[in-house]
Amino acid sequence: MKAPVRSSDAFAPVKISSAQVADIVTELRNDIVTGEIAPGAPLGQEALAERFGVSRMPIREAIRHLETMGFVNVESNKRTHVAETSLNDFRDIYDMRLALECVAIRSAMAHLTNAQIEAAERIQQDIAGTDPLSFGQLNHAFHMTLYRPCNRPRLLSQVDILFNAADRYLCILKAPSGMRAKSDAEHVELIEACRKRDSAAAEACLRRHIGDAAALFEEQFAE
Amino acid sequence: MKAPVRSSDAFAPVKISSAQVADIVTELRNDIVTGEIAPGAPLGQEALAERFGVSRMPIREAIRHLETMGFVNVESNKRTHVAETSLNDFRDIYDMRLALECVAIRSAMAHLTNAQIEAAERIQQDIAGTDPLSFGQLNHAFHMTLYRPCNRPRLLSQVDILFNAADRYLCILKAPSGMRAKSDAEHVELIEACRKRDSAAAEACLRRHIGDAAALFEEQFAE
DNA sequence: AAAAGCAATTTTGGATACAAAATACTACTT
DNA sequence: AAGTAGTATTTTGTATCCAAAATTGCTTTT
Image 1 (tube, each protein chain N blue to C red):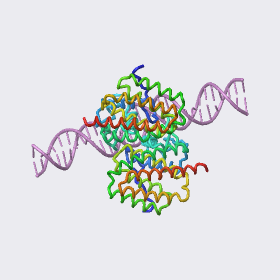
Image 2: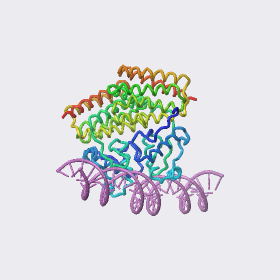
Image 3: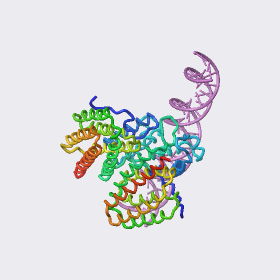
C-alpha cells in the first residue's frame, strides 16, 4: 500500500482509555495537523459530540489527550482552542527532538538487532519514492524503529509526541528543494552507522539531520 | 516558613481543568511520591471518589493527569495501577533531565535577568540549611527559576514532569553523605556562571550536577 | 455614538444512572 | 486435589441531567 493508513492508535503516544476515544483523537489530530481545523479555532464539546455521534464524555477524554500532545490549550471553564503555530513553538519542538533523539539512538544502539536495522532500511526504501504527504508518516516510523529498542518508555513517548507536533509544521511549510535528497542520504548514513554499532557516528549524523532540517525549515518562516 | 506548603497547582506541569481536580492530583501525587500508595497498587475510581467526597468524574480527570506525569499506568477498561519504580525508570528520568535541562539553561541564558538570578540565589540559601524532605521541593524551584526565562513551554513542562518523577526516587533512596554539600557547591557555581552569562560554563556545570547525582543515586539501587 | 453594566444564552464541570468489560468466585470435571 | 468453565460481582466507560462559570447581546447612560 503506497499511502499507508494508520491504525487508530498510531497517533497515541500515551495509552488511551478506549478504542472509541482513540479514533476521535486520531481524527481530530489529523484535522489539526492538516490545518482543516485552523490554529486558534475553538473546540466546542457539544459540536464535536454531535460530529462523532457520541456524548460529550468521550470528547472530553479525547481533548485531554490532545492537550498532552500539545495540540490544544485548555483553560479552566473556558473553551479549548487549537494551539497556535509559531516559530517559537517550532524551535521548542526541534530543540527537544535534537536533545532527546540523540539520547534515544545512543541508548538503543546496544540493543539494536540486525532485524530492526533491516526493518528501518525497508521503511527508508519506501520513503525514497513516496509523495511529500506520506513522508512525514514514514519518516516518523523510520526513526522510531531505530529508537524503540532503547527501552525508555518516557523518552520514547516524548519523542513520539514531538514527531506528531512536528507534523503540523511539515504540513504548513513546504520542504525546500533538495531537502528530501539530503534527508534520504542522511537516513542511509544513519543506518550505516547503526550497522557498525557506532554510537558516536549515529549521534553525530542525527544531530546534523535534525539540526539542518530545522534550520532549513526556519527559513520558510520568513516567507 | 521553613517547610513550604505548596499551592494546589504547584505540581501541575500541565494546565488542569479545575481547582478541585488540581487538589486531587496534588494529594495523590504526594501519596505516590512518598510511597504511601505503594508502587503497583491499584487505584479504584469508586474508592478515590469516596475518599475525596466527589463523584468519579473528577477522579478520572485527575488520573489522566497523573498518567501524563507518569505516576500511573492506564489500560483500557482495566484498573489503573501506580507505576512501578525501577532502575530503568530512574535512568529514563535522569537521561532526559540531563538532555533537556542543558537545552533549557542555554536557551534561558540570553533572557535571564539579574532579578531572576537573585531569586534563584535566595532559594539556594534556603536549601543550604533545610531538611532532606524540603530539599526536593526547593531544588526543583531553584532549577525552574533559572530555566523559566527560556520561553519554551513544551520544554519547561517536560522538565517539570521529570522533576516530579525524580521526587519519587529522592524519597526512596537516601542521599549519600556529602552529596548535599556537593550539590550546594554546584548550585553556587551554576549561579556564578549565570551571572557571567556564560552558557558553556553553566551547561557544563549542570551536566556534572545532574550526571554525578544520577551516578551516586544509582549506587543506592544496589543495596 | 461609544462604553459600561446587566441579563439571557451558551458552554463547561460535575453528579447520577446505565451498559459493557474485566475480575473474582463457585461449582463442576478429570 | 487441581484445573477449567460458567456465573456473579465488581469496575470501568458512556450517556443523560444539573449547576456553575463564561460568553454574548442588549439596554442604558453619558
